Amino acid sequence: MLVEAQGDTLVLEGAVDVHTVQTWRKQAEQALAQMGDKVLVDVSRLSASGMVVLSLLLCVMRAGQARQQQILFSPLPAPLAAMAELADLDEVLPVHV
Image 1 (cartoon, helix red, strand yellow):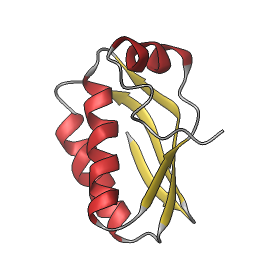
Image 2 (image 1 turned 120 degrees about the vertical axis):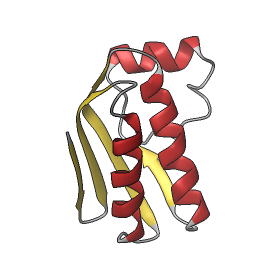
Image 3 (image 1 turned 180 degrees about the vertical axis):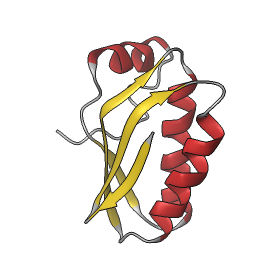
């Protein structure tokens, strides 16, 4: 699991599951607190065994909004994009193109 601020990019790398999502969330919120007004969340190296990853992305988005940050996600990997579409979240998650 990697949650790391690199300039204005928050890198999320590794596998998210029901057992680790809370840790991911806390680490992402801590990283966001150290970042600027506009944050690109790089999810290109994120994997998940279920839809819990969408919960994580929504939590990251809300945490950033609470800090008045503009949150954008890198294009979602195909499996993640398919899950977002299935859950009708593909239009909710702001994806940078």
